[in-house]
Image (cartoon, rainbow, N blue to C red; front, top):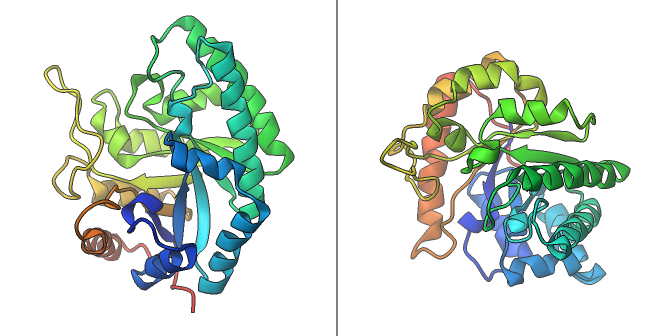
Length: 290
């Protein structure tokens, strides 16, 4: 039995937390994925007051909708591997605050964007700074028993589970795991997706459901906003593989419809798309909280 969640940015914006979580529940989801992206608005969540934290925590208890993951995509703006020491310091400070916030909210996983740098040139040094600071980040998270999950990205730096496994040979901790995005995995032609899942199943803490179009010699691929079923991800094959391997963790539908004319219609469409595949593959979903 697996839980199914929805990314916060798929749901209507500017609602109270209780309204947002109740909406997720009404749509048939067990949890939401909480966003701390690179915008000033969401980065400010890292400095929430006790009362602001209580509001979300209480809303979760009242609705029965969990908050499984904190997606720390703000590291794209302030990366662990930056050439600027002030940015690297800020990046680790963000991570520390994110761990404290996750601990206060009962969030068990922080999803890390697998970029050494995003807006800067990639170098051997940027990789080294990333590795040094990732090691520090894992030590910070371990103290509060919060898992750090590296996502497979839209970037060649970490675009496979194999690359995350290689990092784990250098940073030995149960608090560092992988968060495969099935869309990102599929988009890179060098990845044998089924084999990636099979050989790295022991590292998978959570799974993103997202469609993409592939990287080719003439295309950079499309990693966002591809309607489900219109990309090249073999969702049935991936989910059947994960079921055979005994994966019982969470699945999150990742989409960005919060600013669309009718976000709820888009989310309902996506939910039905995966409900049908889950039923066909034989994945039983966790019942919705009463």
